[in-house]
Length: 101
Length: 181
Image (cartoon, rainbow over all chains, first blue to last red; front, top):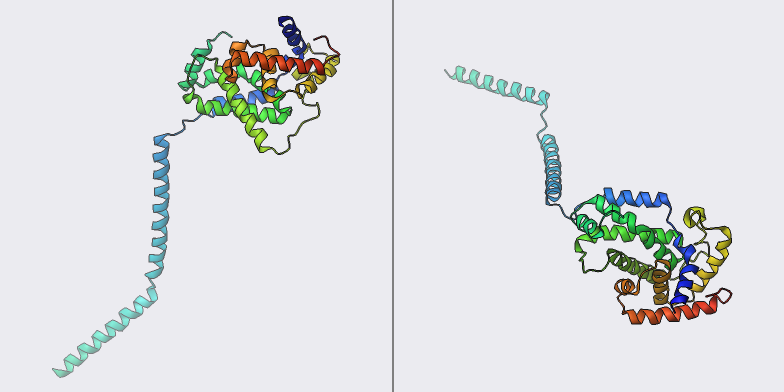
């Protein structure tokens, strides 16, 4: 039995020479030794949550700001015209007052 | 190897990437050989072996030192990934003996061209074995492991392994009748 096993061991010798490609060995080694990250990192999680909340807040403010600006759009020409009309009205009222007296 | 495997495993579990790298260097080739002979497809063997180490890296915290060699745990992962591969694939790609024609790089300088034909004949004989018999033959005759180690790796009793090996040898003797075995 042992003798047979020894013969089989000799027979399989060429299989022991099988090697993976060196380039493949190195590339996987790089992946396993460099890319290891903790499975769950509370600080990364918190940072991610904060960044997401900040980005969403900024986006919301931006949208509201644009809408607000559009709603109260300030036209200088219209404002001047309104002031002129108001002053004319006040002037007219003063003249009427003076006539009564 | 200058380093103690248990120390390397402990360091790797503590997050020492260099220690894991050394374990990888030590065990990549036998795991690759095991997977290649089982799948008989170079690219698949490369992918599965890579997955074995990435998976073991991700799960090293869960590894429990039960006294069994660390490679037994890697073999277990490799066997499970091979099983997944065989389950998923409805048709297994077998590279008609080319999986062994890996060039001089794979066979080493000592391997000669005339050995190739014989090697292919042995590979064909291996195909006649059941999955269990094939695993025992790989570990016993190619990796030259003791029955006690194989029992730890495959989770079978030594008696069962001896019986499997005996049957495998009988089949191979018939297949390789031209050789003196």
